[in-house]
Amino acid sequence: SVAHVKARCPQYPGSETRRFPVPDDKLKWETKWADYKPVNYTAPSVLKKPSWADPDIGSFSPHFNSLDGSVDRRSHLGTYGVDQGKPLNPCGRTGLNGRGLLGRWGPNLAADPIVTRWKRDSAGQRVLNARSELPVLQFISIKRKDCGEWAIPGGMVDPGEVVSLTLQREFSEEALNSLKASPKEKEKLQERITRLFKSPGLQVYKGYVDDPRNTDNSWMETVAVNFHDETGDSVSELPLQAGDDAGHVCWIDIDSAVSLYASHSQFLKTTTKERHAHW
Ligand code: RP5
Ligand code: MG
Ligand code: MG
Image (cartoon, rainbow, N blue to C red; front, top):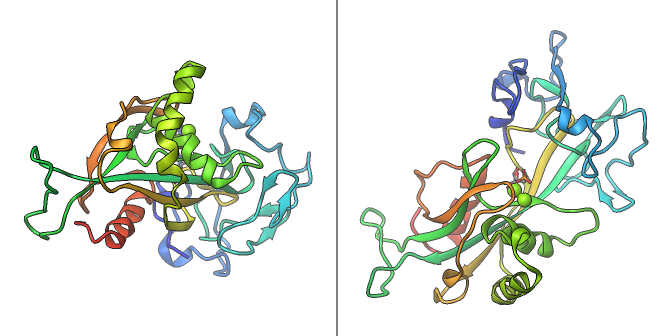
């Protein structure tokens, strides 16, 4: 498993809460640490009991490490530990317990659609990077409203939802603003992206996300899938419009220097390697 870094960010997102500092050599649960005093924090938005959040431990009996009704509590990383009724982050300590901003105890499953095309010049030729001499890929990126960072337009898998649907739904909501479209417009949008999203796509990552919202008991996991518009005439021609938790949306040239939310740049790196593109 990865040594999470953003999951140990000193200030917990959207709050005044500061994490208990966890050094690299104290990450693992197996490493005894008598003086470990994580801060307890669950955001007011989660305590309000919205439909996407679990109740508090004690007032319900979740079936961890299994499909619990329609809620999938299995981790992509295998079996996770449960200590005194609370699931333990498979990447170790974060300096904060409770759920923070996350709704589920244990894994919070997401999906990340990486929609790409080749960067082209005005004559339609693929643009090569001067340094690597490899063609440059572009991806559709959104600027997250919660933290202002650029990211892949991903989102949570709804209970019972298949991941292939989450990928297309979240892309439509965040990059095409489908939530604000009329039923007729929505149908048109879906028609235009269905061919791309019905293609198998290339799974570039499946596992833990180093997300700043992670806690000792709640963490993000994702499946990241690349949908590539090789000829640049399918999704490339769609009008992009930010929606839902996205404030902006645009095509961004993929390069190792681009800084993105959570571990998203790692997913893009794999995408460029698979497509023999510039990184
Ligand atoms: C990240 O959070 C995932 O990789 C995904 O992009 C995102 C899902 O959370 P929301 O966008 O719904 O907040 O960990
Ligand atoms: Mg969303
Ligand atoms: Mg999202």
